[in-house]
Image (cartoon, rainbow, N blue to C red; front, top):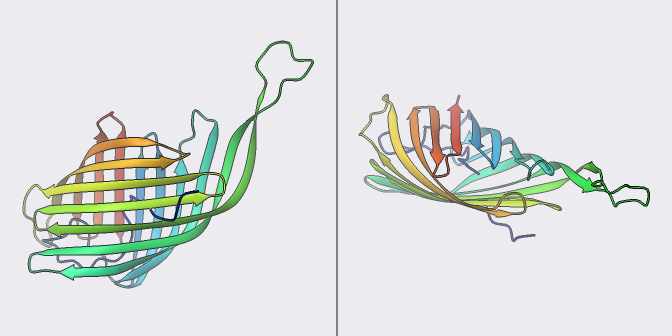
Length: 237
C-alpha cells in the first residue's frame, strides 16, 4: 500500500472569498455543499458536506471506479472531514491550503477464474465473481493561488483499501475569460493535467474545461485530449 497522501475533485471546504477574485463559488458558515464529478473511463463521485464554520466541514461521499473490462468493481462510501489549514489574503490575490481525511467501507466485486477440472473438455474455465466489503481510508490536500484573472491549484487525493488503492494528482491552470462582478456569471478556461496511480486506474491525461459559476453554483465540463468526457458540478445552499 502507498503512504498516505492524496478528490476532484473539488472539495467542499468553505471559502470566504471576494467574488471578483475567486475561481470557485462562494460558500459560507452554516451552509451545505453538494458536488458530483464524472471522469469517463476512470471514476464518478458524489459528495455532500455541512460547514459549521468557514474553516471546516464534514460530510459523506461515494466514489465508484470503472472496472478493468468488467473484471472488478469497487465502490467506496466514506465520511470525511475537510479543513482550511492556511489562507493568505493579499491586495489582489489569495492563496489557500486545504487538507482532508476520512474513513469508509469499500464494496468490492472481483472475478475469480476457476481451475480447470479433469472433466473439462478444452473450453475456457468458468468465471465467477467474489463479493466482499473491507475498510477504506481517504486522505488528500490542495494548495491554490488566484487573482482576478488567473487560477492555479495542485491537488492530491488517495483512496486506500486492503485490496485496492487509487491516487490521483491534478494540476490545474485557469484564466478568466472576462472580469466579472459579484452577481454576474463567471467563465474560466481551465487546463487540467492528472496522473493516476494504483491498481484501479493508471495513466496520465490532460483535459480542457470550461468552468461556469455564479455565487453558489459551479458547473464545469470538457474533454481530455483522448476525447473522454470530464464534468463536475457544485451547489451550495
